[in-house]
Amino acid sequence: MGPAGVGKSTFCASLITHLRLNRRSAFYVNLDPAAEQFEHQPDLDIKDLISLEDVMDELKLGPNGGLIYCFEFLMENLDFLTAALDSLTEEYLIIFDMPGQIELYTHIPVLPTLVKFLTQPGALDIRLCAAYLLEAQFVMDRAKYFAGSLSAMSAMIMLEVPHLNILSKMDLVKDQMRKKDFKRFITPDTTLLDDDPTDIARRKAGVQVDVHSSDPKDKDALMSGATFKKLNAAVAGLLESFSMVSYLKLDSTDEDSVQAILSYIDDVIQYHEAQEPKELPEEEYEEE
Ligand SMILES: Nc1nc2c(ncn2[C@@H]2O[C@H](COP(=O)(O)OP(=O)(O)OP(=O)(O)O)[C@@H](O)[C@H]2O)c(=O)[nH]1
Ligand SMILES: [Mg+2]
Image (cartoon, rainbow, N blue to C red; front, side, top):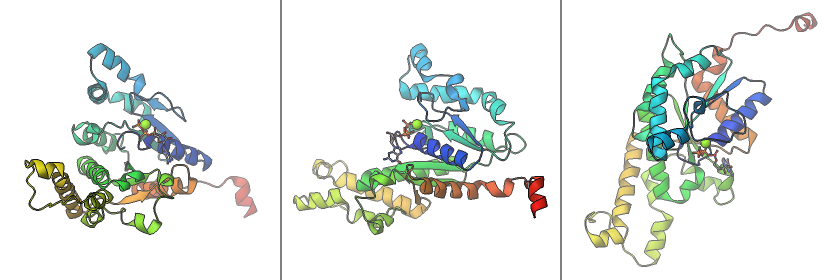
């Protein structure tokens, strides 16, 4: 999961490639009704149930309204998932690739319904691990970083399943920031606001920003950025007080990095504990 363009589908593709190389079974479910191109063809595609293009044409909806309609339609036709997933054994890692419309994670309650359906004991009974991606480049802009972290926390609270937050596209920041400096962004807290580059630039330009006395309705406060700064400080304070969000790092182009994230996922879903003990082929017995 995660906002548009953060690298969700690329991560799914790298994960599947990695699983196949390690002789593990993957089942790829595409739940993005607008996705057209895939590195690995999905084993199940929401477009076979409903396509965003048809919905937009026939119901005269825009892309976001159309997406919500598609998910509501999926909720009414959950057999579509059961029919495909019910027969999969514990060996499979089922990978759900989600759309990037942020309202899906924060505004409407379809995903909690989907999660309950997938995890229901006695029915599909899938052990889920949510993976929420944000772009590592967001750390360059504190407002984006905190807003993104807030959306991650919102998804965590809404879904109520084990959850990993991941900073993707690490290869793009590696050369721009020292490891030590990046470490501070692993857990969002208010100290990160102290050296906000946009703020430092503003101070250099001689603009004074007084967060404490700023009235959001005061035009001068608004134009000097004080209102915005106050909002960021409030969001950062909220994240710090909930203390729920911290990040793993991902570079989808690096197999070791993909393996590291997979190990976390395996732990969360207790993948190895769930495997049937495999019998050794007979020749190997004899050799021993
Ligand atoms: N450098 C770099 N680029 C990446 C990485 N992951 C994804 N990208 C690029 O980012 C762009 C978006 O990637 P997608 O995987 O399509 O992102 P998405 O989150 O599935 O996007 P939507 O489904 O449209 O929301 C593509 O051009 C990818 O090549 C990464 O780890 N490193
Ligand atoms: Mg995608």
